[in-house]
Image (cartoon, rainbow, N blue to C red; front, side, top):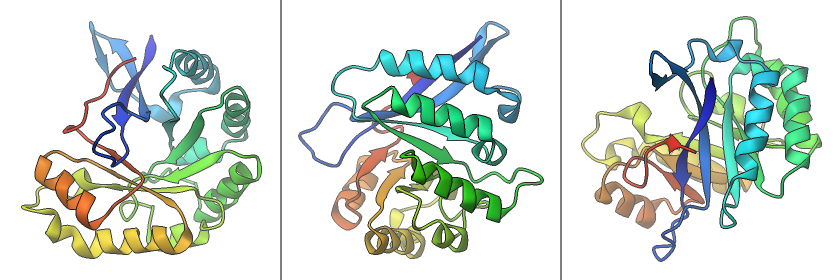
Length: 219
C-alpha cells in the first residue's frame, strides 16, 4: 500500500502561519511501518495517479500549490506526461513536477530538455529540484530556462555547515539566476531560526520549507 506524506511549504511573510502548499513524498507500508519505496522508478502511473487525485481532493481551501517528484526516466516517459496533464486539468491548485537530481541510466540531457518544454507547452509547471547537485547543473538549467517555472535549492545537501554564509557562492548563483530569469525560488532544508532569519534578510524567496517549519507527515 502506498500513501503520500506531505511536507508543508510556506511563504516568507512572518504573519502567515499556515502552509501555502505541500511537497508530496510517496511512502510504502511494509513490515508494519511507512518506508521509502524500494525502487521509485518501478512505480507506475496506475499506482500514482489515483492516489494523487485523491490527495489533491482532500487539500484544505488555503492550499495554493502542491509538488511531487519524478525521477529522470519518469519525467521523460509519455505515460507520466499524460498523467501530469490529466491531473493538472482537474485541479485549480498550482501543480509542480519536481525533476530530481538523480541520474537515470540511459536518460540524456537532451531528453530532459525536450520533456520540460513539452510539460510547459501543456501548462504543467516544472521545478528543477536540488539545483547545483547531481545532474541538475547550471548548464542544464540554462538549457531549460524557457520551460521551467521554479528552482529549488536544498540546504540539506550541503550539511554539515556552520552558517549559511559558507554557502553564499552557491546561493548567490541560484538567487541571482532566479531573479534574472523570473523564476520562482524555493529554499528547503531550513532547520534553525538563525537560518530562517538569514534567508529572510539576504535571500527573500517565494517558498521555504524544512524541519524547522514542519516535517513530512501522512496526509
